[in-house]
Length: 264
Image 1: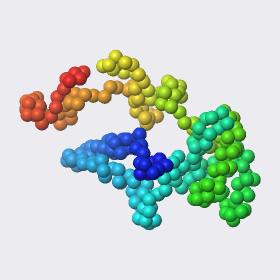
Image 2: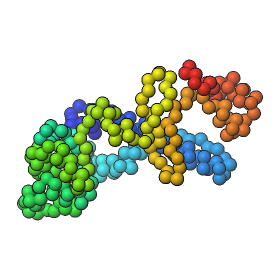
Image 3: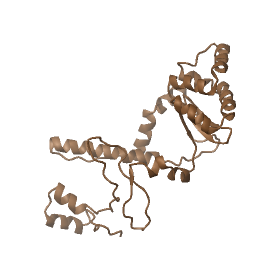
Image 4: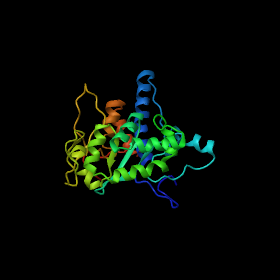
């Protein structure tokens, strides 16, 4: 019920809790491995998806906000809660998201759009100053939006993007996924991507690690393993179990074992 403009609920296409759970699970495993290396003891990790969801909401201030105000946050569409940020359409029809994240960006945005005097008039009328106050820009957004709509609608995207880049302003045009996958900067020339053999025979860019360490070589992407593909390797090399014990665990169905490259 947070998404969309209302009144009907709109599901978000991003599986946020699944993605955060995966990342948090990897973090928890590293913590468990560190504990094992220092204490010699293993441990069990439990990570409920619902806890990741509500815990993330709490970390974002959602619980405190609802309990303090006693009401739901208004549904804002594409507007950003608490900041000046929304989608606008240029003269040549490019819908562009603009977000002001710093006070410097606010000042530069006014200059880029030639709105300094118009905004100053609102400040004088209301007895406020937007210069150092994110909250005021959000609270009085309905007075500001029409000014920005007119200014942006009078300029082409190429012209605006040049001015916004010069001012360090956060913006981006909305793009279809087909546009994104064919964007050279995002995909073709992005070093996180590589190619790996695919059982389907269809070659496509495969993402490797997102983060890098300058002192370490970036490895090429590799295929995701099948479930059980490395069972024997883990049990033998990391846990030092003898072959007979590994065979017993597999025969008993306690652990899985799928031969490398076998999709079944």
